[in-house]
Length: 253
Image (cartoon, rainbow, N blue to C red; front, side):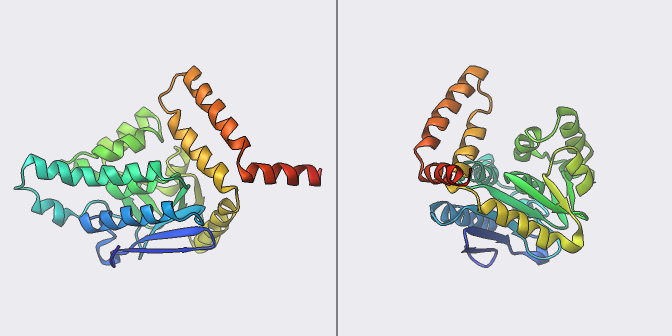
């Protein structure tokens, strides 16, 4: 993974840290590759129940490394397509990951960094955090992240954020449904840790099946979504976690 992405796993929680604080954790090819490697490692670790993604330093992620993009100005379509595809593949890895991914946002989450934060299944933010898609200000398009944003907020809200390029506060992000929880800056670490610990205490199989089904039914007809639910329901009934949970329920009732 290298020095640009740090990875550790303990007590059922895998932690992936973007580690370029001097560049506001801007995403380059090496960092994206490190992220994908960390996600693959956590997906293959059967002891991991929750994955946490955060940024070192004051900011979560400032988006794509503009210096790297500048180097591609004279490259052809094939090279630029390959570069754009890397970030899209990272988002796909997060969506397909069998465990819940929690994004912890301090400071700024901008452009691709905002997309990375909101690509997580759950987003927890400090009160002073900021979110935004400033791409239009330099004649660029928030292209891949648009697929994530459109699934999180209304069409009007999405277009305003993308077209204006303005940043919004964590409070506004919470109000429009872009993030899940906002905590005071002073207690953010402790509050986020308590939330993550509680999430990790849940059934690993139930969390995996829940995430899989939720994204599987996206775009399905009502009938097809119910059919997918029937299959997942039946599968959940034969898991060890369900059998233990049911036994414990009747013991306590």
